[in-house]
Length: 174
Length: 438
Image: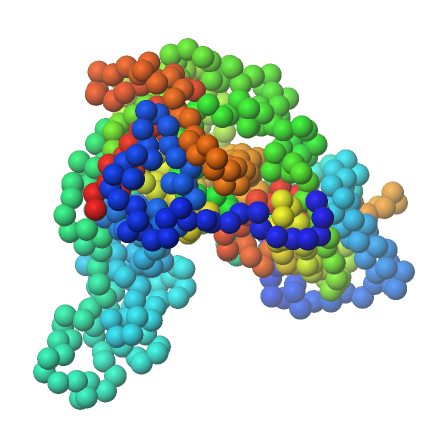
């Protein structure tokens, strides 16, 4: 877990990838964003590695998840439960579903080696539901496994700008 | 859904001013297990609630362990009042108005921190952690009528603590904290004594939820879980094959319980005692679980079984703004008639393995908070109610379920079946008794 907090050093570091490799990472994250916007839960889950951490810290960006509450701290079992719930008939906070649009940008590859790429990005997300428009902003840190079959998300940490503010329900994918 | 975004929620006060609500008119809003929708939608009623409930009664402020060292503080609210809960040099916990005695500026901005003094950066007036005014910029311009020693930060009229839970009242008069808590104090004990050394730590941070609905909707409701939380029973069923009825059978093993003063609980201890062996087996799967059970038996003897069955979760509401549910302390923060925040502080049990506490924390996150599996659906219904209540052709809501079937228990509390609306009726009776005191 010590790899998860974005240390000041990691934040500054920039790793050069080939233009083609950089483009494929960016395309992967943009495709992920579209699946999230469209509530395509199964296709989104297919982007993940078997052993995964999906983490949305609460109260600040840098936390020890063992010693501080998170908005989401899912391993595969919890994430599958979360998605099963959202796919079912009784997740009323998503009836009707949120209309979502996110703009994802500011891609920076922080680390890259033969099988792992760490990339940070930023997003601006608009949600419209039940006549209310809500805005979310955040930074995301993906740890991607790169193997011949393509990229898989090993860890994803979403740092909401509002993670220390009162929040309406967040029952869609971040 | 279209792109013409507009709020369907409009607060339309029935009366234009609080003074239009006579004591008799308020008394008539709650009767015979029915309540009028205006008590959830009216700005005038909300203003009176602040005056007569939140600014008079005992209100939960925070936990002593949130401010362990002298100079530690947390910003909180009592009704509409911004306050500072601070540990002073004498190690006592004070509750001070976050308002400079000069022009009214806040003297503390960070929601949590550590300080030696509170300074107003408008004109420089400075207070120590007891609230004493220790510095006035340019004092020579004030004459002898200015009494610096009487110009400290205004304290809450009364501050009381029960097993680490800090309450304050802005009224110098009224029942003592212990009289106010009554039988519900034992349920705080149930939460605290889930620790083998009888101590909680509140230092995991906080989930802050908000919903577009009235603060009273948080309530305490044993009727809704089967329907509203069907999605959770489905996913739990995927693993355990347990149904809703396994957890909440329609018999006397689960109950609503009314302690008076609006303090109520959903009491499932009998049902949990029946399933104690399974619960202990689950505990033993966690590192430190065996030791925890042994330490609990050592510390509490015969009482250990019931404490282990409760598992620190009394599912109790202390009127008006505190609940202890699951593994967290829940604080209801009214913002406006149709806007409420709910702050959830997961607790750590002292004297228990890190793994055990982490397990409790992960369970809390999965169920509660803005991205949990339970809180968002609760909040969704509160918002739907707030919209629905604006249909005022027939303004009454019905809380009569199980009315007349209550029985008095040996300890003086009153019990009903789990799905009975005893809890809501008790809360609204307490609400009414405070609201009719002009």
